[in-house]
Length: 203
Figure 1 (tube, helix red, strand yellow):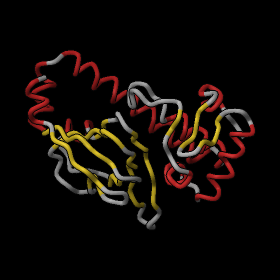
Figure 2: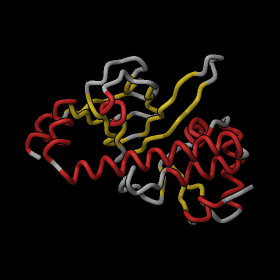
Figure 3: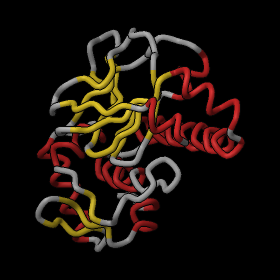
């Protein structure tokens, strides 16, 4: 761990700034110390497609590092964000010498695959109210995002970005979820009251 602590470095990215850009060479593995980012891309028609939101405690980019590819997506800060960067050499060394880290990465990749399969289902089959519910529930993956509390410090605008809805439409969906007793809209965030209810909500 001494090498990991010595090699990793911190970076501040302001709201609206890019943590990573599509097409960049992958030099490090990225974790969120504090903040929130969205992983997104643009379709050939120019439509903004959000793949995932990564809150405090989450890491991303391991798949592209393992395949030695350039980055396939943009990563943008939805608020002022502090990120940790682990250099590629350190990542590969840790993968070689640490069985627990290798096991963690296998779980990470498996969870991420499940997340993206769910995203495709949500985008193609679900209405906006249900998408907002699933978007919130997806942030409570204890493997991908350890330590996230039941009060999610996320704005209605950010929920809209992550679920593919306007701020106004996301607000309507959140009010419906609050009426159903699944969440409470608190100052500075959204408190989840019934996580399983969110995961299985159907409008």
